[in-house]
Amino acid sequence: MRRYDTETGSSRVREAGDLSVGEPVFAPEPGRDSEEHGHRLTFATDRTDGASWFLVIPAEDPAAGPVARARIPLRVPLGLHGCWLPAEREPGGRPRPVTFLW
Image (cartoon, one colour):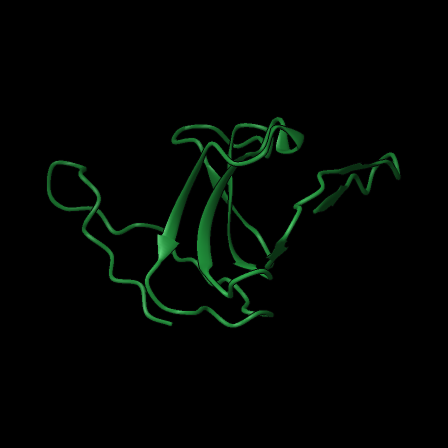
């Protein structure tokens, strides 16, 4: 995985080993607007066995690797693009449950 800084032209790299990593999306920390405060969410496929994973990567230090990963019970195809919507709120401010379809 590689992250480019368009202002400085620099980049940071994290080797993903046997994982083919999809396009990440940014999930900001609630109440923060900086792209360094939150997480990158992505799907990955293990090239050794075809297993699919959902990865949670810290935005401030992607080289540290995922802080969480969940095995997806079905194969998510490589090249999948993420499309994420802001959470709707219930009365009282709690986020409503979300159903993901792919």
